[in-house]
Image (cartoon, rainbow, N blue to C red; front, side):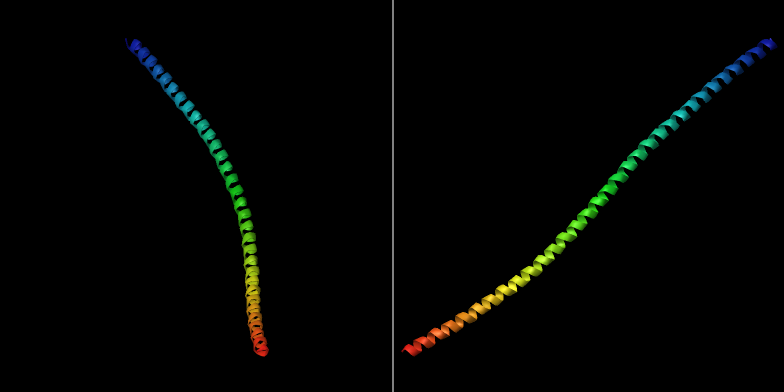
Length: 117
């Protein structure tokens, strides 16, 4: 009986060892699958990150171009304002000369009328 019990114990231990080996293999397989998943996730993350980085670089270049264009437009606007100020001064001076001329002309007509009387 002892040898029968010993055989049963050995068979039982062999079963536990088989189950333990099976559990270890399942765990190992899960770890490998997790590593593959992580590797795929990492690759996806890196691809996404690289894509985003390229978009940020492109947007930065676009922003730089827009700033350059804005600076050019700003300079043109300032030039136009200066030209307009000169034009306004010239216009105002022309109006002043016209008023002076009209005043002198009116005075001349009055003198002519006085002389004719």
